[in-house]
Image 1 (tube, rainbow, N blue to C red):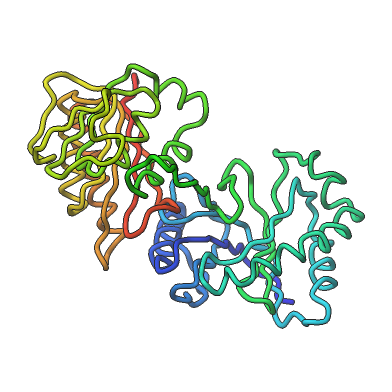
Image 2 (image 1 turned 180 degrees about the horizontal axis):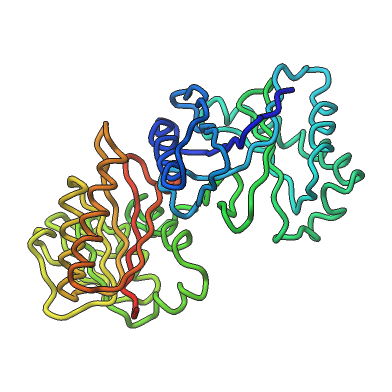
Length: 358
């Protein structure tokens, strides 16, 4: 059993984005003080990274590429097929904390999916001794959501990474994934991206307040209508801008006005409540478009995607977001902006931008 001598952080990410995830976490740490610890090697397409810090803290909300943020306590290697339970129970017994819940997790990869059946069988076997030790509540219904979560992450059946997450500085979903079900009426799977973004960036009260029936929205690059559908089902009137056709129930929907125009050239006659945009274009160009809309006062809220290049992805995100910040700061506009690579995103990042009162 290997016990880290410095603070180790375990971060989940989309497979293929391990370098971006680690680079961003280390940059955030360096903003506090230099990182002098030697970093573990990054396993490409593994769906997770480990970064080693001194006493720097990481902020989950400010990390774009991290799905989950876990403080790593132990790494147990060469688990025996005959008895994986004992070394795990013994290691967890050494931790000073008690926990609100236990999550057994695997990488979001094809190999990880094959481990899911194992973790489902293993979960009750591990929970029982941890309850008897007082590490977990007696009843899962009694789980204290204010207590840290206990994570046991299996990159494979012979290795376990044991860590904990702060409920106020982590994702509230198992494996850091907020899954969505594909609605039968939605015209495309892209609808899942906006559905997830709404849940990730806004709590229930904000959703009620910011997505009200009777509001107005513009969807740039709307066809075939996946994002428009999410707004229409909430009673929001949408101007869908795209040279392509709207499909399904949106083709003749009373709340949809379809304009066959270029989204980069369109401007509304009067301000709308929402701007959404999922156009395939360079991040800097989309960022400039969004900045122009907010500087002109065309919209108060926006959710948009930045399509990422094959290389220098973090730099591309930085460039687009910093361009928006510079423009809004110059105009004296108060705003709040958050960005995440969501589970239903692919080679892209989703951004939430809202104009605030000050």
